[in-house]
Image 1 (cartoon, rainbow, N blue to C red):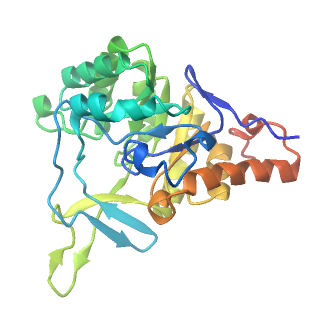
Image 2: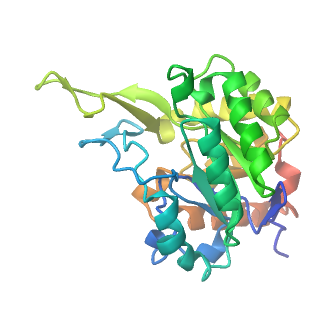
Length: 304
């Protein structure tokens, strides 16, 4: 018998726990010729803002040992073009599309949440709080519990859809951040976003990235992500979505054991565009081989 693979994130039911990570999968359509989208649990769009953004100057991606650095700068088409040009594709897919979005004030976040709430093809919202609060001297929302809570509160009031908050690992205490977001109304938490890093061109004696620093992702960050998922899952009651260096079904299942209800596949999609589907299929096969009837029995089942 096939094992039960479905999980729930707030009011969102997924056919399996595998999602794609924002910024690594376009708006879904770009990968549709490589991945059977109906074989994964959900996909997450590139981060959306009120106005289009061109992003940072190049070079803005560099490969690193065990991963990559990116300083894309949140390039995106903006909410209007998303509605006009990207949403029609979502109607053709029987897989939940989750819209990631960001702003620079709580009001901007709330406006985006309200507009996305009105789009039937958007199944859930993921709030990117790794952005500077321009009204508070540039402090990053995701590094201050009070700022993070203000954003979540504003978004919660603007949408009835499942509200996921994506947490930054670049903090002193991620548990404090998680609890602040849960208390403000988050239905789930994505753990983690990228770690800040840099690369240097020795011959040119210059940073490789035009932006100097960027976000580190890939297998190199997996041990950190696992630790943070384990910490957060033990401290909150809402579901946790594990992210960070997931390249295989084994990686994904480790996150489930650590307490994640679902996972997101990011950098792996650059190496293998079909990674998310293959990971979902591999997870199911692992359960079949061990006679495990339900993926949910593994959530947080880490011993010791």
